[in-house]
Image 1 (cartoon, rainbow, N blue to C red):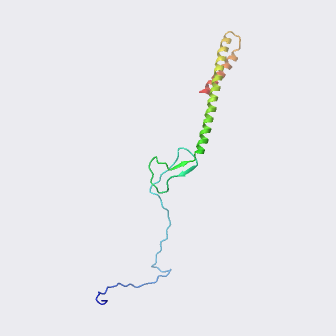
Image 2: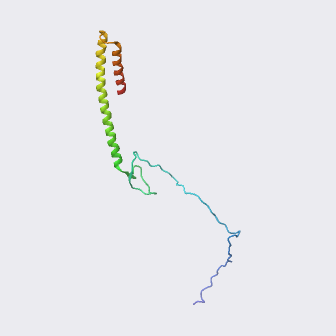
Length: 139
């Protein structure tokens, strides 16, 4: 049975040893870097420490998809600070409005007294200047 099979033709080639200094040897040495096709900038509306990242590099995301959550401690502390600052500012406005009411009454009283020549004109002008300064601070 071995002799019945047709003989296959085999191509042969000469083997040549190439030394390190051979002129027929070519070596390509290159360096470079990979650049992404598309870049996207991701930012948060508030600052804080990242608690959890819900995506991985290379994943596709949709608009509005939550990609990470922030630690609420920083936001809670900022909210508390802002609330106390707002309360202090409102208190200061209330105080200045009370001072303005007193200054308005003083200016009106001194105006009638200046007309009767019971107080000096400078006292009246000082009272109106104080009233005007309080009005300016409230606006």
